[in-house]
Length: 301
Image (tube, rainbow, N blue to C red):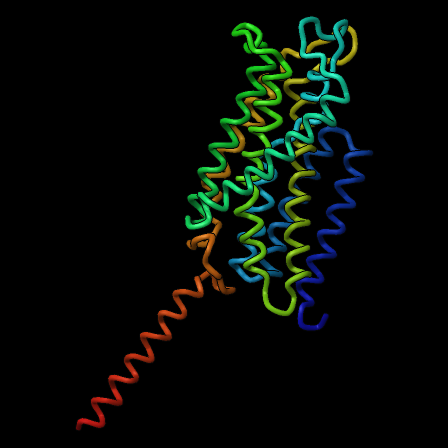
């Protein structure tokens, strides 16, 4: 505890931030929740650079901002897909069994496929390139939701259940895991020796806090801008705009944020300075070669 007092202090700051966000979501009004999101994000990101080594702090902040930039839309898509005929004439009208069970099982299978594909395609590429590519794929996967909320799939003859399974349930899960894997691998490689579990739990928890913040921001946008009416008269016309802004436009910000990641390949081991261990070994070999040549020259003389 003495050696890692900064990290422990950061854990306490994050705990207070989580409690504050929970209370804000329950008790605060929309403006108060917005102010709380800004304060929590600023304090936690600043404390990350104070408590952690620079390369770990940058990766930690990136994991948080990556979750924040992909806005969650609480109630919007769920209400659209589960609305009954009298609420949304001509809508998907999914049952709870299909929406929460069948599609979830299929989505988990798609997630396993995404992890396998990531291992074969992206494991030899850099973190920055991988994050940019997977972000683009994730954005393209969100187009399926826009197509369904605009009911374009019915116009081209694709049933809602088939479109949802082939699109949101499978494509989204594959895209999600493709975008999630680089950050998780990076977090596991950056944890300092002797405090691996504590730092990894801290960084993973901060990413989860980012997802909570994304839900709060999504709720704020629905309150201030494009709200939906789930009481008579029902109105879901803003759902496509919410998906477009939250799942297409905002995730574009992840690409410039990838500069926070170290310049290393996913398969490389990284030290606390963000340099690959392979480079360190090469430098040691070069130094040994130079030392051997110097000794040989001295013996010849």
